[in-house]
Length: 124
Image 1 (tube, helix red, strand yellow):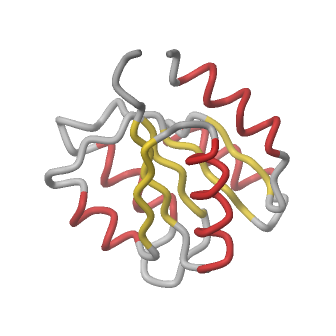
Image 2: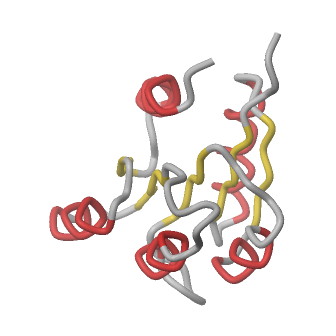
């Protein structure tokens, strides 16, 4: 069996962070979770995940700003980024796509939708 795919989860709400991390680990992924975009950026100096799952609305730095910073980091600029948002906002989804987000999922999320995205962007 190959190396387990690594996923970074960023969410300021501990319950959501725990939920998403649990679901991903259950599927066999190696998962690291942080509660702020600043923590994520500090971790990304050395850590190279295969995919990043991030909340869109966070107090320290929103997901758009985090994605913009990721896209300017040469070693991880092409890493797929999936956003979660508690607000179904068409404009936010359009901005996310324009910035290069891989996908946007609405909270509460459907595990099957998440698995479909993972299968598409993290082939075994």
